[in-house]
Length: 342
Image (cartoon, rainbow, N blue to C red; front, side, top):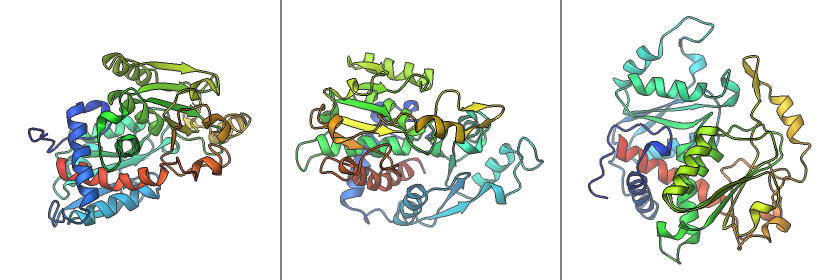
């Protein structure tokens, strides 16, 4: 890993990075987890800007803690309080904003999710535009299409749970089955976290099954990338509309609600329509009965969890749940990304 140089790199989706680069991040993240306060000079006296179009809990907390523990400072910014150009208002362009912020900070994180865009893919376009003009790394803190920091925290947690005791061996997830299953709920969530889980799981050699009712298909490009990743690793990629089939033989179960493929129309997200539709599929919940079909699988989720809809308390708070470990790993993975890129 010593030959890996990530300085200046943007992180918009893990698929943009090589497996060796992702392993370098995890290697450093594991070291930072073991020696949490041993890297306080990495970003000494530097500032990291955080653009929050959407609010957060773990994302803001983890990035602010990460900057502090690296010796720097995270500055919270709300675009609505800035004079930025939008589709309907005059203001500063992305080109100008990105160039100016590059003179101030060592990196820029952007979080823009489903209800702040007019159609799927607009968040991705915004991050790519900032990356085009900025002279500092652009880090996705979750956008409508991808959530790379969550993906890194996910795979780190799964490896920890599946490795031999007191070891961290990325080979431990190879050949293991990841089930990404839709769940009913009242949140009309974006596709970003589940798509990132599919991509990073398949990159690390896992079999991947995606289960969802008809009408809840994910991004065709992401499905194709996942299929290709699996082909490259001689593993299996499957999709199913059956709510139980995917559980058979699974080692990791990721049960989460996501919006349907026609959630956007007339230039906006119709959230209440999505919620009303999703809540009708009451059988699509991760429970003990379905988990019993697995190979003693661990339950994973990026949080916040819609308990009682996406998963039962018995599973989410059970002995095979890794949700809090994954949440903690957001801190360590993000510290590693920041230190290596900034």
